[in-house]
Length: 395
Image (cartoon, rainbow, N blue to C red):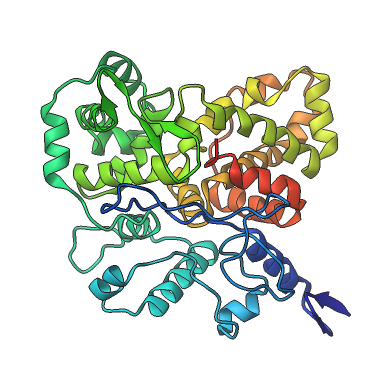
């Protein structure tokens, strides 16, 4: 007998229960759209007294739960409960696509399930226009990149080198330096232009301007910080144009990982702490072994957390991990890094100097990493998972 919510069912497949727990736990934060008429921003998903995001719809027990969670996978697959949107869409966009809002919401749900279960086609798979890859289109959908403003981007580029240009130039030459695919496709000048434009976009009166994302929140500061060159690189590689890459990159930074690009890197440092907590939960023996060698996450995982796994080659595998992160939340980069550690667990446990192994993680195996990370997420306790979700988007 397996109890789930208010229901009890017999002979439930254990794998079904496992998937149910994953879809219950995954969280995506609704993109924050600025109200152009009032100049104010919408509020983030409300937080319940226990600290977790409250539901966009009633759960099986009528309790608050995380936004966009699906308590029961079979309910979501059969659409019997009328779950609210995984991604909210206004009527204007629904009209542009020719779909009703409900149809659009269901389409996005199915897209995310396909990404998790089947993956995204590679570069060889082109859409009918023969210009855009499936991945570029999917990323734009996931990032809510509805429109691009060519005039704005051209005006930002026309400003020339930004106040942080020298810092940008110093970093871009080292961006994915060993990846031939990236070097053959992306010109360093384009990366510099895009990062300079990003700085100008948020620059006012001689300094980065403060951006209040929602009523009552602390103000974010957006400018160029360490690691942003690596975060920008996948967008220039994937998108068919520099303009589209810039718009997706801005949406990504503002809505998916704003705490990671603050001057103090507050989100990154929280991520380091969360990595140690997740590793202790997943594999206490490995966690204790690393601690006995005086190895904390800051020593071996800082680059991976800073870049959301993008610093570990090869790029094609990074893109598959990012498909997963964009679909289900950048906070899942932490379980992905734990997964990388677990894949070399035996070597770490038998090594008298594990730091030698940790200086350079083995080449990324996206399928294995995502599979292990998904399993880890299902088993996290609520408190740890809530901290994980919030660390990328709340100051």
